[in-house]
Amino acid sequence: MTEQMTLRGTLKGHNGWVTQIATTPQFPDMILSASRDKTIIMWKLTRDESNYGIPQRALRGHSHFVSDVVISSDGQFALSGSRDGTLHLWDLTTGTTTRRFVGHTKDVLSVAFSSDNRQIVSGSRDKTIKLWNTLGVCKYTVQDENVMFSFPQNHLSLHCTHSVFILTRRRLVQPPSQAHHLYQPCQLSLGIGFNSCWPCYHCVLFSEESQ
Image (tube, rainbow, N blue to C red; front, side):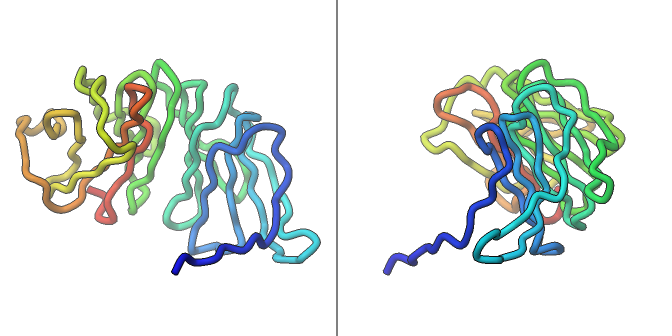
């Protein structure tokens, strides 16, 4: 039997489409929402019938639509990606940008933290995936002509045992310190989502082991 969903409340504050929301088990009363109004709003849930949540602060700094937002595993930081081609690392205590990541040449569509919060990965409409450290240094870039091929589903993930692997259309790619090989699916490493309409990376994620 299908579970019945009940609308508990509505949060109003953005002046454009909401593109993404993020939550964290560390702070169950906090929600982040990203929007085409170029902002991220941090909400505090009150669960009152008349007002289910209130906006605590707006995170401003992007110059174009905010495409994605995620929260670090400790709940202290947020990471956002934007159509302005940048990523921003936010301190949620102060609401300020602590680091700006520059390197993509087109829209950043998806971002992710590793579970230890020491690595960051981003996918872009420039058909690249970038692996960063939290200082804003890009450690590795994958650019492959095979991203032009789309998969039947919009999201796909593969699992491998070695450090960081990135899935392209025909092979798994390792960082340059190791040779390129084709591996059979095994334990989750890095999953990439492809959109069937646009030849670019729309979803990136880390495994729980930060591999």
